[in-house]
Length: 116
Length: 230
Image (cartoon, each protein chain N blue to C red):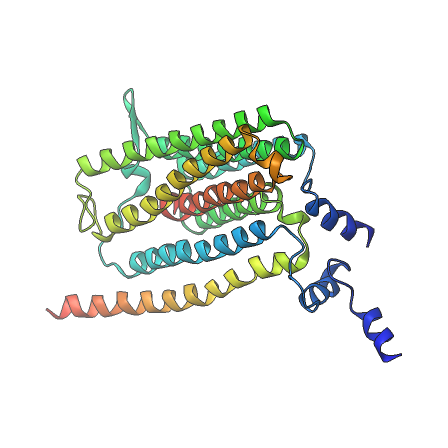
């Protein structure tokens, strides 16, 4: 309750979301390092599943830090967090459908181009 | 008596932690988010923007999955010629670091705003805008180079013709967001300078414009991973 009062009260008085500068500098540095790592994935020339796993790993790591620390999501109330981060999960359905559709289109094209 | 039980089990608005807090916030018959309304609306706008960019990236995925002609290798397409060697993705890497730096200065600007340090807030916001303008400049250079190489929305010299349309659509829409963000940041920085937010009594707008800027950086993280590295 004390923490909630503090958060709500702080925002109401326009002094919300004050965090130590040091934290931002650390995150900034981490984002640089992770970007360098994801660039290295291409530079070194990893291929196949190792490449895709590494790309996704560094991508989600960077995205997580930006949203949680820079956009202050880590300190927001769960009602706001779920309202904003929940709906994008529906995109997984769209991606799943489009993977199926993409494979189907690919196979149809193979058949069609061979037929002519 | 029953009323007492009900009020005891559901926390009041803005109180209670975890899922009890969610129930309390939504069932209070008030606003649902105890944050400035501008911040809640910016989050909701960013949510809608997430869906727009996701549609672009998903359609790019579908197009790339279904093409029977090999996709151009982005590592070679976006290589820069330095000395005698081709460095893969060099310009894109520099653009990534520029945008991350701008996110860093923006985070510091928000912090300085809440400390009511006007000079540093304005300086950091203008630095952010300058990084953003630099990013758009490099993107213009990249577009020019690719157009000279013969990339068009309907074809290119290296492979699947859909490469060009995906590239121009995705990076173009992102560049538009960066350009709009630069203007937005300059407007807000100017209002900080003239003391507009001192009269208003709070510096929430600095954080709200920061949210938009960090989102632009966030989208780039995904574009960088899916379009340039994949």
